[in-house]
Amino acid sequence: MIAALFAEDPSGQQSPPFFLNPLFLVVLVVLYVVLVVLPSGRRQRKEQQALLAGLKRGAKVLTSGGIIGTVVGVKDGDDEIVIRSEDTKLRVKRNTVVQVIGSDESEAAK
Image 1: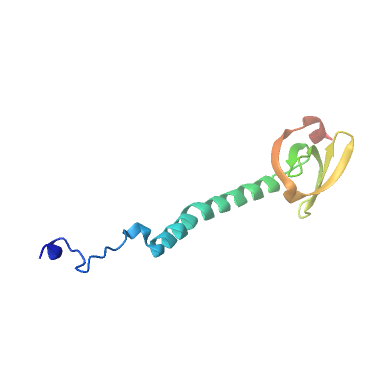
Image 2: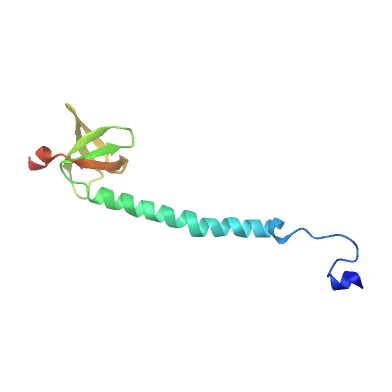
């Protein structure tokens, strides 16, 4: 009778707490991915596309290879840009630019 009052299993075996259930853990991981990981990935992709679309002559950029240079040539629709670093001109893929540091006013005026 006491077992019925406390809703215990009469065989004496206790079920594990619901948060240790493997299905609950899988649902929790899926929920985390949907609510946290996917939106941040979309936001980063949009920010990177806006950065690349806003590249123009005279912008100081940092590439993923660690090269800091000034954009010398940009063509819309082309996926390569030309940057100048010290006395060297380099052609790099547009998507290697990770950060725009500032702008070089003398280069933009040319």
